[in-house]
Length: 468
Ligand code: HEM
Image (cartoon, rainbow, N blue to C red; front, side, top):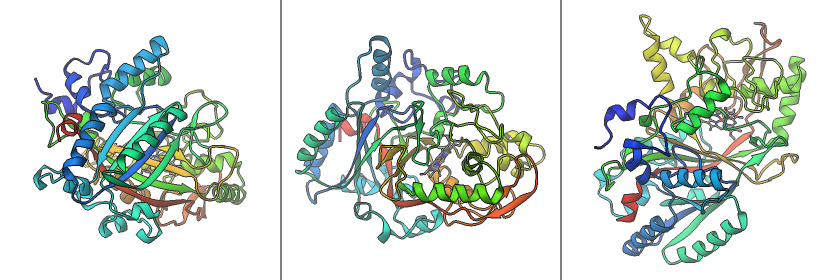
């Protein structure tokens, strides 16, 4: 029996058990990996392709072969992870294949069978999209991103030598059918404690929507309970039926890809200046920017870092409605308000519905760092985050988050100011002078992240790619 709408709207109590998937088996076999759970490899290479004119049949054949040989299904990904845990046997090179709207058109897929999401069809270079997201002019993007992109190949492995060998071999092969218009090499950046961080030095990837049982159970152990925040999310927040799938449970997901350059030196200087202005410690200033200290401690819970091995995610802002501990503008509060905006739109006491709607804007992040791989250096340019996120509806999820929450001056209250990390354009925020007290100071924290290009993609089902 195929999965029903109800199966997509309600995750099993503990998430999907990949070792015992039951009715989700077909779904996991035909769905690409890295969507419901991150691939977890330390190194990855992203190849952006533009197919050569009038080679449609050869290109189709090449994609079929790639799907046979390299694409890792969600099921294979978890089977390999199981083998690694049990016997220490590492998995094969991980592979994903994504298509843009232009890619579907090149492959001569009928218009009604091209995934229908509006921003996906418009593309990230579209003027309406660009201005709603506040993105810089396309002429300032990396050259490769300025060209028409048809497909994206993602290859990942823990062993960088093995990975680069396969990438070199693939680069040769691809010459027949495509131009690699752009390439990005990503890696997992870690701090001294081995935690995953981004270039500004903050622990990253803590709060995610969860779908798989192993993740849900682990999170429950770390957070005792989900009484303040339930990280689980329904499948229909990340998956849509693949219009071209060939099995009864063929699903795909929309991928938002953005290259975000980080000016680490200037960010740290601005953070020090902010601390000076507010007469507070630098680490607290950082926490007021991000919403968490660099070790991941949520600033709404504490005014000092607690150095937990696994930062908590079981919190909300109910005890901090005036935002005297965590400002409304803080990156994590703007991108996941945990009830703040639901309270605003609640009518006649129907908070639950409004809260469900707010939670429906969540995205599943799969970002990796690029550039300088030494956390002690402070690069000005050439380093940043390859921001990838999956969702079922780009307009209602990534685009909403960036344009309706992160960017605007007004958020929950008037004159909250933009998200100091990613809000475009920059503006002035109100900062608490003392943690937990209402007195505020105005400060314009500048934007030290620069968008260098990107595109919207779809991750088609494997059965479609194998039978193109
Ligand atoms: C959380 C950094 C871009 C959405 C975080 C966290 C950090 C961070 C340090 C806290 C740790 C965690 O909960 O994972 C960055 C940096 C970025 C960036 C350095 C750019 C270079 C973005 C963008 C979006 C976004 C473009 C979407 C518009 C989120 C979300 C969370 C988050 C949804 C989780 C919030 C929560 O659930 O509490 N980010 N981020 N981030 N970020 Fe970003």
